[in-house]
Image (cartoon, rainbow, N blue to C red; front, side, top):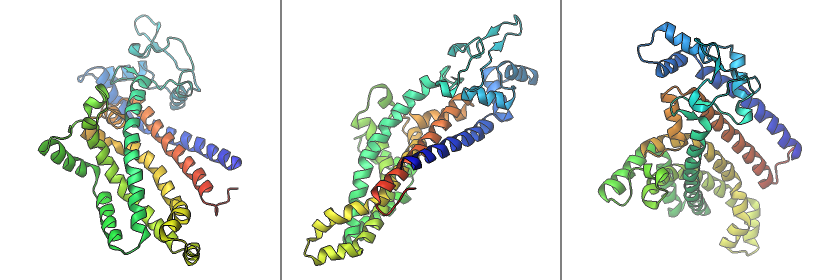
Length: 345
C-alpha cells in the first residue's frame, strides 16, 4: 500500500505540473493580457500605453521565466521605473519585493489580485473557508439522506417503496441547481417568507438557518439523487449474492442480514461516488453562490474570470486541481481498504 501511495503521489505531482502549465498558458494569452492592461490603465489607452504597461509589469517576459516565477523556482524580478530607473514593486498595494527573490506558489505566495487590490491569499482563503462551511452542511444533509434512500429502495427491488424512491431520486438528479434554486426561492422566500432568498449575510453576519438553508437545500437535493441511485444499484446486487442467500437459509432475520452482511459491501461503490462529490461541490458551487450572492470560492472564481484577474484565477484553478487529485487518491486508497477483493501492488 505504501508503494502504491508513493506512485500515486508521483502521478499527482506530474499531472498537477502539466495542468498548471496548460492553465497558465491559456490565462496568459495575449487578448487576456490586453484586457488586463486596459483595466489597469484606462479604456482609451493606446496600443503603445498598453504594451508599455505589460512590459513594465513583466507580462512580456519569456514564458518559462514567468511560469517559473509564479511557481517559485525562478527569481521574481521587480519593475523598473521608467523615469528614475530604480526598482519598484510590481503592485504597490501588495508590497511586492523590490529585489529579485524566490516568491511563488511553492513559497506560499500566489501573487496579487488586480481586482480586489490585495494579495491573492487574503482573498482566496476567506472564500475557501466560506465554501468549506457550505460544503460541510451540504454533505451532512446529502450523504445520510442519499444512503438511507438508496438502502431502502434496494432492500426490496421492484416494491412500491423502491419505485417511489427511485422516482424521487431520478427527479432530483434531473433537476439542475439553477432550476431547483429558483423553485425553492419562489416558494420558501417569496410566497411563504420562511427563508432568506440571499445568503450574502451569511459571510458577514454569520450562518443561520434563515440565510443558509436555501443554498444547502439546492445543492444537497441535486447531488442526493445520484448517490441514492448508486447505493440502490449496489444494494440490489448485494441482496442477490450467494452469501446473503446462505445467511437467510441459516435462519437469520431479514434486517439482521442487511445490517451484518449487506450494508458493508453495498457501501463500497457509493464511497467512490461520495468522494467524487467534493470536486463537484467546489466547482459546481459557482451557480449556487452566484444565485444566492454567497461570497465563497465559486463567487470569487467568477469575479476573477470576469475581471481578468490573472493571479487570482490561477490560484483558483490550482485549488481545483489539488482538490480533484487529492479526492481521487483518497477514493482509490479507501476503495482498496473497503473491498477485500482488491489487491494493491
